[in-house]
Image 1 (tube, rainbow, N blue to C red):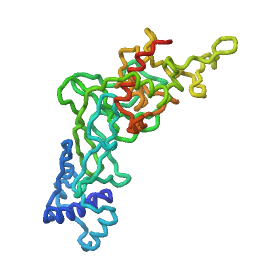
Image 2 (cartoon, one colour):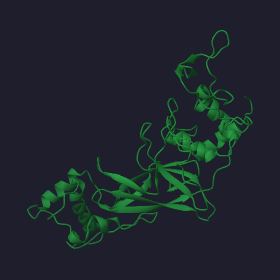
Image 3 (cartoon, rainbow, N blue to C red):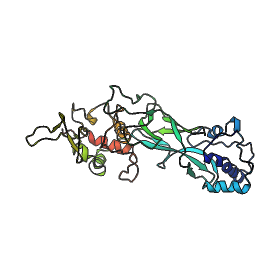
Image 4 (cartoon, one colour):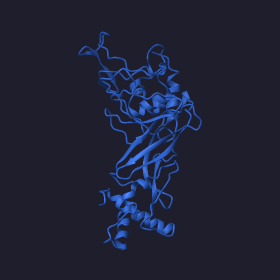
Length: 337
């Protein structure tokens, strides 16, 4: 008995056979297509077509015409030759500490292009690990961020306290000390097994404070919440100079709205605990925090902190590790309370 499968898997063997017939000169009922992506993907097809149905069966009542119709209905012009994992920004499978690399599983086609999987296809990212941030109103004393060691550190984030990220965003935090550093990412498709790819981990970029000043003060308007010198949001004051309190707690006006907590200080004032003055922070962790909505201990950030993943920098490319290195370098120059 055939197992229930997504509709695209029913069409998938037809398309593969059509492609093999055109490109390789034939296709037998017992053939089992395989593929390896550029990053070393595993043989996903051997999982798609397991031992019990290694010869993908098609309803024997289907004519050649109906086969062609099924392929046409699937919207496929070139034949599907496999699946692979790609960087949806269009670049290679690589990232530097501070990057958020958006990954996706796609079809590879016989004409050398790729095509998105059908809408609704379930893809689970099972390696490396997924970090779940702590509740900002009830965070424990220990960090949930994995320790960086000799090995490169990268992970996914599932943040239940903020707008969910698109699945498959890989946060790179550390390169480690090994040469040719890389991490293996593994995706699981419902009823279609797993495939993997290798993501190269590049060295952390060196920051330029002048570029960072432009990004902080103008391009991303960080100044609106964290202040011109990145000292953070001061508490609101009464006309007599006293603190404006609600239920005994100070109130902070952030970008025109009142909150019971400040936008934290980011600059390098000594003994302030601000981000740039705290050795527990770094440029890569700043990049992770801004894009994953969690701090360096894995505590979820609260509104109105914006989510920066995918926002464009002055070069019109998605914000990246170099941008965060630049901002961090500028923050290190700011020592005014």
